Length: 344
Image (cartoon, rainbow, N blue to C red; front, side):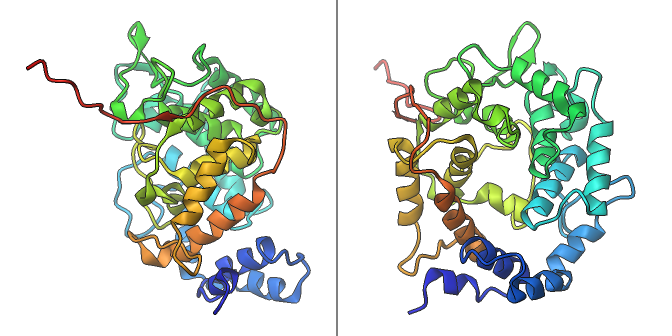
């Protein structure tokens, strides 16, 4: 019977086979097989189509020819940078330079990105600011290595200043109060914390070499881990958007689906370790969701199954056994809209 690692190598994509050999089998960069696969990236039809959709100004207005989702070029370009980073592109590549320049030029004087430009559906008219307007483009720039650029320092400061006193991020500021918080975006132990905005902010900060393991960021992740949910159907959903198997849509609802794999990726970069029972529970849940061969079956898009299986294995391997991580938030069962008791 083939091992799961060997099964992953049967995928037709040279990119996935390259990533498996490099990060699972730990092949060195000068390995002949790796070099051959790297040279064959140009034969990947999905990647070629994706690169052909980059606009002259460096942005993406859609991520595939079949993509007709209305989304902001700011959000789509951020997703594109995450994808290119995952595939091994660097700041030396022209497509990266053009995309980064496009995003950086759109920043406001205070370091944020314009709210109206980030929200393609213009549902934020009553809001003064929403953390995601800056968190999403910062995520893309951070993923490709721009987090340390001095020009972005004010953007990280802007994002951190929007943090609630309890350590999470709100929906935004509307009028003279924090914005409406839908039940599915609520977080335990906080009145105004928005899971979608907190997830986006943590993703942006998790790429910064100094902020990613700072106490405020650790506290926010601690609060996110307190939500006790098991959503098998959503495992790998965000990774599917990055790779191109799921559409990138929404703004307030960008992280509406709770993806356990995405939470574990945050744990890996911010430093939550396996001694935290909540982290251990996520790992056990992900492994228990795989079939007898060790393959996670992504039922919505079966051809994405090997990609998400690779990311599960890689992420679990990257979680430290021990670190300076400390938890102060107890695990809390979550229900988006609790049933109200009838009076009669």
